[in-house]
Image (cartoon, rainbow, N blue to C red; front, side, top):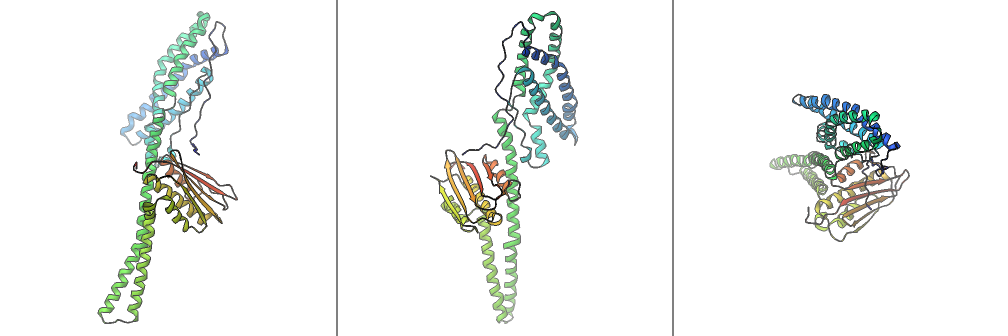
Length: 396
């Protein structure tokens, strides 16, 4: 099951234009209206570009230049949307709306601004507004007199001129091609991956500092005191108690280090693959979990690791928040996708914005071209479906 969560504002199929004739059909009047409104719209677009875009570009030597330019490009996108609407209404031309910029996934303000500054849709709209002024003057100057002196041929003239308009809209106001859209998404996703990696490093540093490191410091101090007492000839019960306590600290520190290592990358995943690793993490869940893995081979280590940590975090959520009595994990391959489904019979109500780490999981999977879908009605049950691209081992 492949699910595409990316929505887009798609127009319907392009309207078939009626043939041109000497009688003025409704479409002819719409085309004439489009040609006559070209000039005022071209003036608005040209003035906007020259005042906002050019001014912003000229001021990039100052601290406000780039933000002003980014705002101007955002406005250019809105002008492009209006022009596509005008083309749909008057020319019967339907073009898809460009995909929105993935600003929410871009991270900080600077990354968002950089994404806007590189937006090819906005820059093509700027070019459209620049070339439209001479064309708007021409169409207005030709069509207005023709209304009075070239009445019989006006429908043919309007169709020819608006065909140029249609070509301009298709060429400059159509959405970016798939490659441009994917480049923008992947650049944004790269920021998510970097932020996630930095957060993981901070978590590891915090766990080491507050856990194993603190225990090892206490251990060193305890052994130091025991050594001093031994050197002073005080080999009594107090020294034995210190050594016993130090021994306990060693065992706890080792357990914390093992847990930390498991959180970085579990050895069982490297040695035995997803089936064994997921069974291991399921055995630590407070809810009985049935694990079914139907994989003909092992995926690439990176995909295997993402799948493991996704299931691990979902099972932690089940233990902490679900109130479930049973759960299941199913993993299988379909064509070039790795599918994961985690189910529980708990109270439900899980959401991507619910603060239980679901949103972070969705962003991590999206960063590798994966999908993450949560179905959790109030009262349960909860079904989480994750989908990852399948890459064979050895492909990275």
